[in-house]
Amino acid sequence: MFFGADVMTMKDYEELIGKRMKSARFKHSKNVAKEAVRLAKKYGADAEKAELAGILHDATKETPEDEQMELIARAGIVLTPLERSSHKLWHAISGAAFVQVELGITDEDIINSIRYHTTGRAGMSLLEKVIFIADFTSAERDYEGVDRMRKVADKSLDEAILEGMSFTIADLAERKLTIAPDTFMGYNEAAMLKLTKKK
Image 1 (cartoon, rainbow, N blue to C red):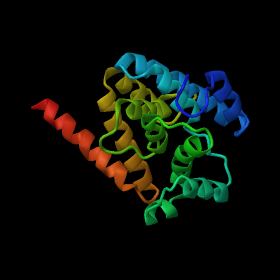
Image 2: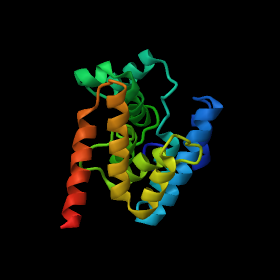
Image 3: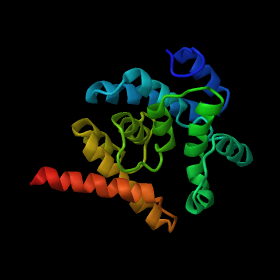
Image 4: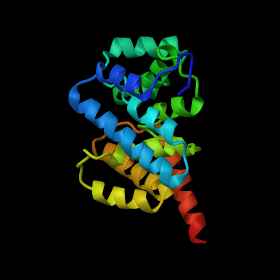
């Protein structure tokens, strides 16, 4: 496997990530990787990249916030005011920074799949869509509506994107939290695609 400056096996990446998080988070990461491979094979994405992005997607979820901000700065990422105030978004952005500056991964599709796995966005690649949905449908997920999400994901990846975006927007709005513009843009794109297909 060669995605950056160093050659590492999937086992190497798993061991590295396992040391960075508690067992429940590590189990989630492994489940997302497994689900990402399944979805990649189903919809024609690169299964090897999907597995790697899946195992790495929460790499900085349990990293102290000051360290996350340092990683983001080292990667040359400038946060918008909304991103800076939304701490829940940081791990996706700092995770993308981590795989670049610490692991030497240069594959833009893997980097973007990690960066946008929480918010989604318009113009997502196939791999980005796979990781976004795999995070929703991994084996340990038990939120209300997960069964529906899994059924939709097995029917259509694009419909699952719309379902996931709808869920995210409704959940954040109900809790009176900020919603990333990328999420709105991704939702609108997915909704327009569905309307186009109906015609």
